[in-house]
Image (tube, rainbow over all chains, first blue to last red; front, side, top):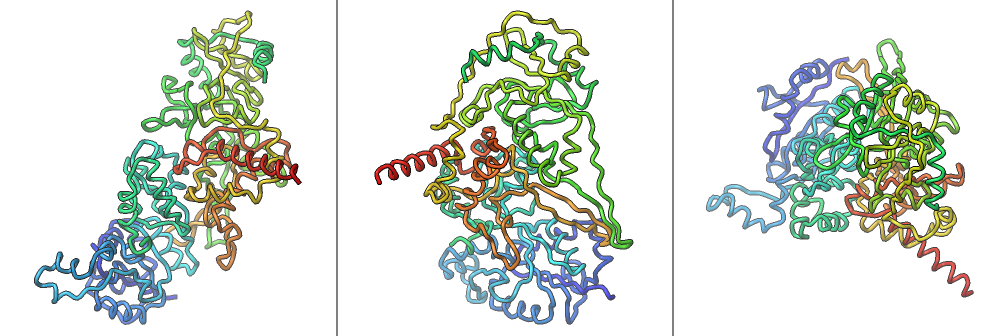
Amino acid sequence: MSKPKVAFFDFTSCEGCQLNKLNFENDFLDMLEHVDIVEFREAMDDKADEYDIAFIEGSISTPTCIERIHDIRRRAKVLVALGQCACSGGVNAMKNLHQPDWVREEVYGNEKYRFPSIPAQPVSAVVKVDYEVRGCPMSAPEYLHIFKSLVMGRKPEIFDHAVCVECKLKENECVLDKGMFCLGPVTRAGCEAICPGNGQYCTGCRGPISNLNLEGAVEMLREHGFSETEARKRLHLFSANELV
Amino acid sequence: MNYLDTITRMNLHEKYLLTSKQIPDFISFLKTQGAVYAAQKKGEQSYSYQYVEDPANVVLDYPRTIQPLKKFFLPPREELLSFDYQNNSYQKTDVVAEKRIFFGIHSYEMQGVLRLDYSFKKGNPEGNYLNRRENCIFIGVSYEPDEFHLANALGIEVENTEGLSIYLEPVREGYIAFVIDEAGQNLIQGFGKTAKVTETIHIKEKPAKAKIRYHYNRLPKVFEHVYTSQVWGQIAKKCLGCGTCNLLCSTCYCFDVRDEVSLDLQSGTRERFWDGCMLNRFAEVAGNENFRDELSSRTRHRLHRKFKYLTEESGALHCVGCGRCSKYCPAKINLGTTINALIDDFTEQQKLKEAY
């Protein structure tokens, strides 16, 4: 059996998720045993015509993005969205909360007519996405799980419970209990609660669990002393497309 | 329960004085008898049961730990077996039943373990749990109930000694060790440095701060009538479905199992980890059907497990009143308030029935 052909593509993003992969170091070499990487702009120059698995990073935010993603989808057997920008639009989607003209003016000034842009969307708004690796940056353990599952031809198991679960499994001291801010109760797990486990709070970078109780979440934050405006703003940071 | 009864009952046990100075010595002695675990500070203001390296770190005056004692018998994550695709084989992971002494636990915590014993022994006894449960000695300690502790209201008084070998009650000089069983007697005698106490110890009453409007033995009856109560919907408005109440519950025992392959794609392990009925995938079946889709039905199910279903089977309430679900709920949903609201609903129904 020949090795699956794998390719990586970047759209509107900081490319941090792709970089994160190169940080796997020893694991990365083991992964190379099982696949042929045929396109990976950040690490090599080669190009290929078709892919068994295409990993997509970044959101769709320009007309050219749409053309490119259609082209990739046509040539890919399995397409996986990598990181929050690709999964939900990520932080890019915050611009969707403002007037498009104002946003372009603010960013490009007088040159704005040379840079056509559309509201930042998840990859799944344009083409079919088979699997998602959420997070900003994408979660390494979840990525490895999906990678191994796809190479073995089995369906990955993706969690749909809150970060609270992972904190409780690790017996982390509750961040909210300490009087800090936290979106752990409504944010999708899979990150092994890396932020609350290291003295930080959950910013919600993996987006909400599928049964988000939005009004309940706002009320919860109010109970912990945050204003409704702040609560909603913080919820929008990574999930503007999903929550508005 | 009348406190005079408690004092009489407790004073039937042999008593020894462990002075404050002797406590670290006693713990050091216990360490020669087995692996000692006790509540220790965790983070800024929390506590956790941990292996005792230094007796000085042991805390005897604490409200509750984050995870209940179940973590030692049903670990949050546990490898069940390892497998190998290449030669189509698997190897069960050994569970070593070392001798363990749990020092300074509260009565409801012990009761929680006894409830878990019931759950894991009935039907097909669960080997890993029961292996870990062997060779364990529990030394209890008194505590001051806070606003989340419901144990007293649920019939588990602070001085409940069932399952314990020794019970410690603070006095001015240190602690009075009430010897409950033979294992406790052996430990006290082995230590040998304690003075026997002959006079009656007047245990101070520790008033419960949280109250339930009915006697606990009426709760199963209440739960027969509140299945369609509006209370479930009201809670669901606040509930975020984070599952904290399940995972930290002293008596919740549900788990999920997942196989994880190593990067060589040849071998791997089967792991089980805590799961809970408040979580999305728990009641999900093929075709993305979920037979408890709404948070209201999940809370209802969770509490029926505690106050009705298992109670009908076993005769005991399966909530021991540790207060973790209330204390650690990010949305501040309080179990005592919920039960009282259900009682109100029940009372209202009874009045309506009368009127007909």
